[in-house]
Amino acid sequence: MARADTKKGKLLMGKFNPKVDLVFRKLFGSEENKDVLMSLVNSVLQLTSPITEITIKNPYNFASYAKSKESILDIKATDQQGILYDIEIQLKEQSFYGKRALYYLSKLYVDQLEEGQQFYTLNKAVGIHFLDFDYFSDGRHRRRVIFKDADTSEEIEELQNVELYFIELSKYKEGWGQAIGALERWITFLNFAASLKEGEIPENIKKDPTMLKAIRQLETMHFSSEEREIYDAQQKRMRDEQAQLRTAIEKGLAEGMERGIEKGMAEGMEKGMEKGLENGIAKGLQMAIKGLLHILDDQTIASSLGVSAEEVAKIRKEK
Image (cartoon, rainbow, N blue to C red; front, side, top):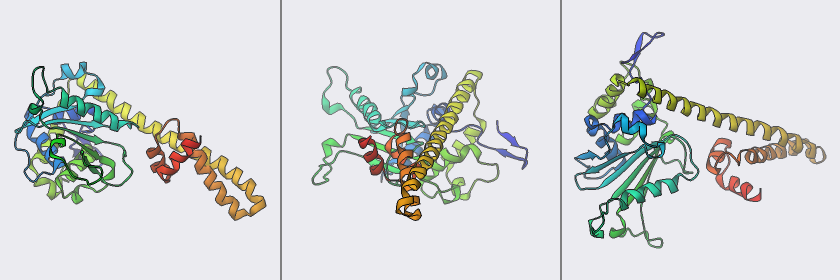
């Protein structure tokens, strides 16, 4: 059921946040939404011959969901060629997420080989990870990782049986009307569908039937009291973690800048006021970085303070 926006008299279509684990699993992992999941996967893969059939190996079921560990709240599927997919969304930043992604992809690949079977029966395994934080240093929002020859960049066919895709949601900053590609539309859906207002669906979205279906699913999605309790807890945890991160960054920056500027200004009395202020700002940044080293990874500190990850790594090594 949609809810009223009393200020504008419109209805907010996206009642639930699709980035929250429970909603993501219920929306993309339900049998009746296989076409929606297939559209999402095709938008990531960007193949010349898109997949035309998908089977969900672990369809959403609240009883099994409630019993599972949070580290395995993913969607497993297979296509018409037998290729295996592991799809998940990760909201909380993890410094070693790459190792985690490799672990679950490796497990997906080896678990298909039963005792007595031969290696040639192994099907391709693909890990797709939607990240609600910046994990890589460049500005690309889609990344495909495969095995290549380190010297020639040759892609050896027998080693192309595993692939990883990382989609960093925050790096695509355009709105609904600018989302031309399928992947960009799905990123926009995940980022903004919860606040999409009735009557404001852009034309480019109206032309995508699976996108419209997903929007309507959010509008009419029903939660049991137990599901709602889990959703509220996940939503609260997400907000709390975001608030804690902002507080840590702001506190570390403020304290570091204050101490650094004071020290730099004192030194600058001998070398000149202008040079002192410059040194103070530099020292402030260094102290802010040092104050965050024990709670954040290098890339997060770098992007938050506007410095390079290499500079943060250097300070971490020195400390």
